[in-house]
Length: 364
Image (cartoon, rainbow, N blue to C red):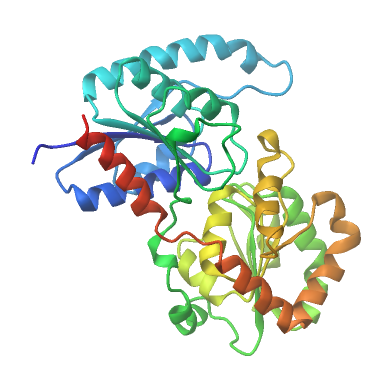
């Protein structure tokens, strides 16, 4: 069998990086001799996270457009031209069989050049409402792997495959890990555990909420694992105690999900997909500061099927304590949310995406 070569691009946030790594790992299982190259945006977190996962990465000088006039926006045409040229050089040198994009600034120039050079491209769209880059790229893409139904108004129907989002395989059976997880985090097995997830960088408004409500939460005999993000850890580490664990980043996501009884989370696409597999009661607090209000749309797709609760940032002051206490006291509601969100899980997503990629290299 000849040696296959794959270029993957996804970055900016963990929500774009980890799906790309999951796809690469699945392809590596199938083709142990294959070569992999990641392409990211210089100075973004993929430049650290991808090498940590054991893959080589090259950086492009690219960034997104800001919503107001800034020096960065004025530089955008120059950065785009430079990135297109660099992407072309990378593709010519590496000679990939397929180029795969999971979102983020760098995937735009890379997939655009790959299409122009007639190399098969695959888009993995994580959101229920695609961003402008993927909408533009979709016209020339060979396959578009989506996580939500009814995206025909954005993408060519004949190229779309409903796969779900790639997730860590160690989340598939977390129930069996609960005892080990409680020991790992040194938790009190007689108390309920609230897990707060703000995403890899953190969520300022969620952190402010938890700081304000921490006393009330503890008064209800609840212990807290609070992932505040690396940008905010110095501000909130003072709240560490026996009943509150403040962390910037969580290595063992399988254990933290296994230990949790209720989860408060942002609604990035990867997080939503993971939470469907995990199947715990969730209160989503979507970030209103992302392009096209993606997170609210992702959360609503779950809430509309009675699989989670949703609080907008503007509702936190008036609604949070009522919603949280009601959920904490209502075991029936907790069970209903768990069962409904599990119905929306797509645990075979990574394998199905790899199947679509394999189809393309077989027809070359």
